Structures are given as structure tokens and as C-alpha cells.
Picture (cartoon, rainbow, N blue to C red):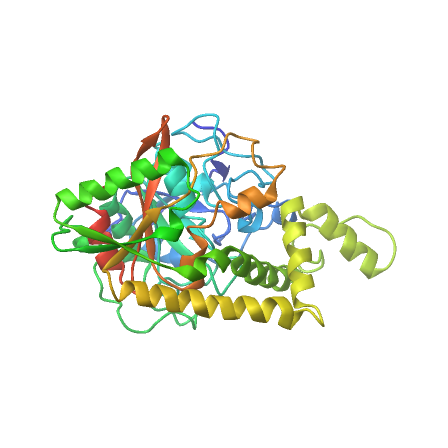
Length: 422
């Protein structure tokens, strides 16, 4: 078994029958599982055992799936390489010695290594698509509001979605069929559309499909990644699709806007971890403020502290309009650009990641390099759109992913197009 894929290995049996009967599933360790610890990859929650199941876990069990473990992840979902986990990093089964991608690296690695048939991850700015690309598997980031977030430990709640990993598009779509749909416990889920059948859309028929290729998402990408991407587009053309170039001028500001918004939400969401109600509590003498500070110092890793500090700064008096408000304006611009580009094309296509998988340890000393690697994935979360990453091939023996982006709640179209490649 590839090292460190699971933080907790524990079998949770589902119903005797159902659409996923006998299917093994790895669940990312920020999704609540009743009676089985849920750590978020953090010392802060090392011993936390939730008293309830997340909605997606309940739906998995009702569908007959067998949960085989809680998958390793970047701490609280903060990272692009899976190396910020308190429990250690995961080796990439598809490229040993390299990172599996983050933050859902354990989930993607579980599927790539054959440790689970399918897996659940979460995507705040690419955390499903990045590890799918780096591990050579399929990953779907659903439209915001398609899948319930009840029971997901929040990091950036206006951005994140739970989604599936699998070895092929049809299996990922079958998992999406089970977890999608409205939930009275999550007011952000949409009420209509519960009768969609995503697996049935995996026909591979792309005849007449128009693909928009945003030129900005190819600029600066690794040459081998770009060549592999164009080979995959040529494959789709051979099957009857056609492509043209489109422009998304706002994406040059997407990474900055994303990190201001995500870190601001992280600062707010992680304020609850104070050592009083649950989680790690420092054995510190002194007043409550000192105990609180020591608890968070011990409980959080460097990347989490960095994001909380930056988020708190962006929200502070005198800086809110300068940073957070501007980031929200940029988000609206990104959304508008995607809407315009998708009015001229059925789907948009780009490399999922502009680089092949980093070597383990390579990017830890340069957080900025890690943040910039998200350039092709974060705009999709800002725009609340669905996207899928499918294997496109390899460069120098390392996996490369192709990302397809569709209109809001256009998962069936994305699944149909992506199934022509995987």
C-alpha cells in the first residue's frame, strides 16, 4: 500500500443493496463520519470523533457503499501538494517520489493505488482537480450548490464543494448520482434537478461539441504539459468536436482574489477552534487568552497559521475595502468572463495544472509557487461553475490532466465530453 494514504483505516458498512453495493470508498478526512475520527489533517482535531454523519456519507451508506478509511489531506484543506498534513505527506502512486496534489491527495492516491474503487474529496480552489491530474485519475468539482456541504468542516464555505474521484468518468458520475441533490440541512443546495442521471451521460459522444480554449490558461504552463493538452484536444477533434480560442482577461487577478476571499473565510471559520469546546487544548497556565493562544500555536501548522493571519488582516478595520471588497469585485468579473466565454462554446478546456507533479519537498519552502500552481483551477470556484479533470497523458513519465469547465449545473454535458477521453 502506498504510504500514508489513510489517516484512519476503519470500515463503515453500508446497506445490503443499492447502486453502490459493494463499492469501496475513501472519504476525505474533513467530512464527518459518525463514530470515526475526523481530523482535517490537523493536530487540532487529532482525537475528534463526530457524533453524526455528513449528508454525503449518509447517502453513500444508503446506496450500499463501504467506506474503507478517512483519506489524508492538507491541513484543513490548505495546500496544493498534500504536504501540510500533520500526519505526513502521501507519496504519489502514479509518480513515486512526487506529491499526489492537494488538498485531497489521499483520496486521489487511494483510487490510483487501488486502495478504494472511488473516493470523495473537496474542492475549494482545485483540491479535487489538482490531485486527480497529478495521480492520473478522474475528479469532478460540481457546481456550487449541487452537493450538500452539511457535515463538511468549513474552510472557505462560499467556494468549496464535495466531489468524486474514480478511475473513469462513468464511475465518478455514478458516485455523483448518489451524493448530488437538495438537502434541507444545507440551504445553499438547489431544490430542483434531483432527478439528473449523470452516469447515463457518459456516452463519449462529442460530435458537434464546441470547445473554447482560454489562451490565458496556457500562458506560462510547462511545455510538456501544453503539448500533452493539445494531443488530447486533437483526440477530441478526431471524434467530431471542434475548438476555438477564447479569452478570460480577468483570470490574471483570479489567484489574488481567490486567496483573499479563501483566507478571510478561513480566518472566520477557524476561530471556533479555541481548545474549549472540542479539539486540542493546550496545557497552559495563565488566563484564557494565553491558553487560547497556546492552543492555536500548538494545534495549527504553519500554512494554516499563515492563512488565518492573512485573512484576519484582509478583514481588519481599514483594510476590508482595500482587499476583501476588491477581491469580491474581481470575483464578479471572473464570473462575467466565464459566462461570456461559455456563450460561445459548450465547454472550456485547459490543462488542469500548469506543471507536472512536484517532487516531494520541492515547494514547501516557497508558498507563493504553490499558490500560483492553482492558476487554472481557482477561477472556476470563484465563478461557482462545474469542472472535471481527466487524464490527458504524460510528460516525462508524469501524469497530465485536462480540465473541462461547463455552465452552472451543466455536469451532464461535462461528463459526456470527458467520457470521450476516460
